[in-house]
Image (cartoon, rainbow, N blue to C red; front, side, top):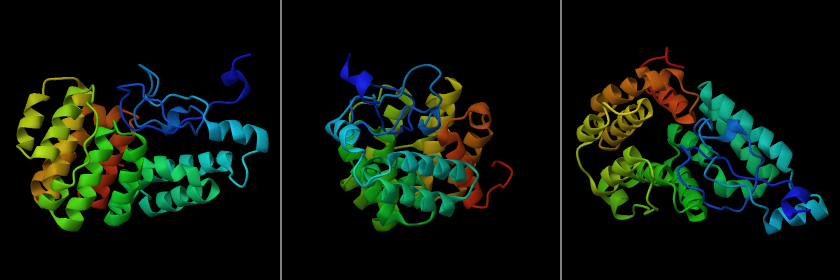
Amino acid sequence: MALTQIVNPIIYPSRTIPRRFTAISPFKTLNPQFSRHPTTHALSRRLFLPSVSSIWDAITGGGDSNPREAVAATRLGMQLFRQGDVAGSVTEFDRAVVLDPRQKAYLWQRGLSLYYLDRFEEGAEQFRIDVAQNPNDTEESIWCFLCEARLHGVDVARKQFLEVGRDSRPVMREAYNLFKNGGDPEKLVKDFSSGQASEYFYASLYAGLYYEAEGKSENAKFHITASCGSPYGQRSDDYMASLAKVHCLCRNWSSGFV
């Protein structure tokens, strides 16, 4: 019998549209609720391969960690975030880390919540830890920049921008280059305004976030509310679609999106 049939494989949740299959130290059971995007077209890019830690857990019972309870805490944290309870989500994500400290390196959801609580230093730390484990995550690199821009300004944040591998999604490649090198967010939106619904959503969301980093709140509001009101923003189960709605709620732009 194959080893993967003996040891239940575990993976870490992913937020991004599946773009490449990168083997990571596994951790959670595959669950659509942990995906950043719906998994209707492909499996998450983070594969479920048995690691030394999972083999040891199978033998010892997991030591002092409680991975199943940690998974439940993470799931609840994501649910609370989607409902607009950002502080409650962080409480659950932190509880997940207490239950199983291995989670800390993969909890990108916690980093997003920390951003909306203005806990930017902790948010940047979370994203840097995660990128260290998964050096191909475009969005976490951008979110680290967003946290550090609020702490130190755009110029300093750009100098220490986290470089990651090439994203297979054209819209995220362009968004990554925009944040990394600077540029015109209006061009990002224009270039993808006639593309797929998800591309327009992401272009609008990240254009708005770019403006927010620059302190241009009206421009940020225009684009992020547009992402919320887009067909993809309204209908998708994508975690980032929920994030756009939470963003509007936290900025008091609209309470009707959540």
